Length: 370
View (cartoon, rainbow, N blue to C red):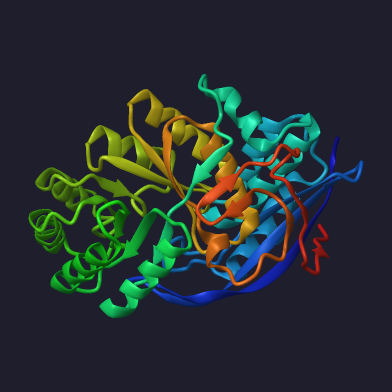
């Protein structure tokens, strides 16, 4: 079954509220959709968000990578030679992980459809454990003034979310105040994860996390406290605090994951398809994590349901994944897609339809000519 055509489309989905971190503020999801079609008319979808401050990928660079390198490299290849298709796609261009992820997701969607299986059941063949059919995601609380963050946290709890991922990283003492007031408002039964988005120095991170520990704020974990390039700083923070440290921007590749584990630079790993270049490399990180008994989170950038669905299928398939930060669709004001995992507040139900389950994407697609 040969790959007949590759097309690009665009989506624009307003967010319920602005998404604010230590790195950026975003008001809507403006992502690229990749559609791959085989000669028998089967279609697979993938998605890539331009997240220049994290991946370095812009809308223009993603489009150029797909048009100029990825599409020419795999058009005409036989999907049944799946590993060769993925290998050629991955090696046709360095970096550009978001563009690769979009194509990789579309290819996995197609291949699972070819096999007549939901993607999570296909991926679970690499894992002896039974796949999960239901996930629980956290909900992101953007960094704002403390009173607004408290209101957003209470609203999330009212919607049924039991796990909050609170963005900080804009001032150590202020960050402690934010978490203290949120904890006071939501009570002790709600799980709080703290995400600094690289916003602290190593000294500020240790000081701030220790202050949270001394105040008994019951923080489950702290995500990426220092720059993603600062492995020594990350290791220093991990060694100086009791709270588990989750590596995010420090892990883009299999090699990064191996280094984090070998150097004990973090306790946990956040796997994101837009960092790894897709499901294929994310699976390799899962393999390494399982070999070393490291627990993982499957996270997402500011993505809509296409890419998040792929992440959910991977999270369901692998036993090392014990946490899900897949709230992208919950942050969107509308769901323009048909099919895919079903969201009920924090609950994500995996579909039994083949592929990732998405059956309709409302985008105007333009075929790539090679």
